[in-house]
Length: 547
Ligand SMILES: Nc1ncnc2c1ncn2[C@@H]1O[C@H](COP(=O)(O)OP(=O)(O)OP(=O)(O)O)[C@@H](O)[C@H]1O
Image (tube, rainbow, N blue to C red; front, side, top):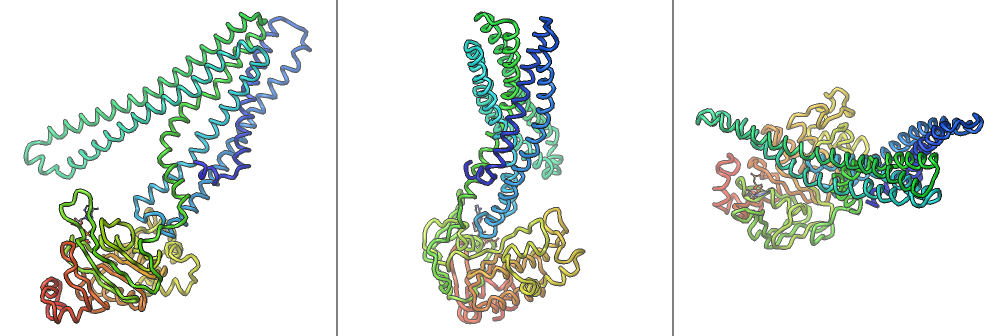
């Protein structure tokens, strides 16, 4: 939380908080002065005795509006600046690999960062105003009539702390139930749509529909229950507000205060409660935002992506010794004792049937999957997998993400190598066309070319590519792969591929079968000496089958 608050400029935050407090103080003072004016006027004093109170009422009314406006302006300014600063920190974290670069992770990070806006505007500033104005009112009561301060303090604590905290806890429980019920309903709806034909064939459509109705009714009931918590909490705050004002009036009467003071204290108490009213909503929002706040704070604390285990100098190769990996609930290990050494500066293709463990091996090398056992040594921390996220920004910015200081020539070279350059030149705004979700649509192949160009531009000591030519047709796939490998000459590159036709482009080929490394060596050599290798790839095409 402290880390997040640090992203907001202290003096701007302070200014917004002071403006908010000033607006609330004016509101309370307006009520108090108006109460004094009305009760005093009833005593029919000379008009001059009321003059300054009339002016004060008008002044407080004007200042209240003015300060409220300043508070809104300053509050939004500080919140939007903090969010912009956080976005840039997240962007840097994405560039250095401290954030998983898949779409879901990035989307949730964007929502987390946006939540910080609410944390400042709807939680922190109202809480500060309520604390300051509530505390200030108590001090004024202590000065004017200490006996009347007791019901005020008790009421403020109830309405400003006890009720909001209880409501937030109840809402969190109710919210979790609603989320679970909605997820169950969504799953059932998907089943209904996907299996509509089968349900009709078995005459089960009506039964499945009735089940959907039942789940929908459960969601509605739970939502009503959650809404009832908010309504009850708000009603409880109103009762406490009214009750406290009555008790303040009674305490004032009992201690012999005149009717003007009684009216002023009772109405001031009512006004003071107006500032604590929004705390029910603030506490609820705070509880909602807590997990995302923790994620953002953790991100801010992360100095850089943790280096893979056994980081070695950039000149070293990749060494994997007796590597085991297992996914939870999987029947067999995804990798079962793989040992492999890739010489520095060499390219290696990882091949094998579907489910053989190729992607898992790459994920372990990238440090994205924790192995169950074994030792992994890769060149320093800058190993990189081809990520699959095209950002909603220009083509240029998407590429610059990999190397922010890349010049025009480096951009054009990387784009030309992967065949992206003609695609960019045909786009409506060329390099400045916005792509990604909600932007200009890219075909699967164009997207793949962009991701590869970005990987080439980053030029990490170890580049890991998982089926980099997926989405490209045969000839284009071979051309792009050859260009990528040519650009990476002398740089460690490990590529998972299904294209048997391309295997002779690599310095070596590693064959996985059900988590085991069954062959490893240069393609020509393996074709010559390894019957199993020929067998595994007989189905792929003439390159291997005929040797
Ligand atoms: N997230 C996961 N959770 C559980 N099991 C997984 C997960 N990812 C992969 N597996 C299992 O681990 C094994 C190896 O999967 P992996 O994705 O590494 O294979 P692959 O060789 O890359 O396959 P493909 O060529 O189809 O992409 C498979 O049996 C797969 O079902």
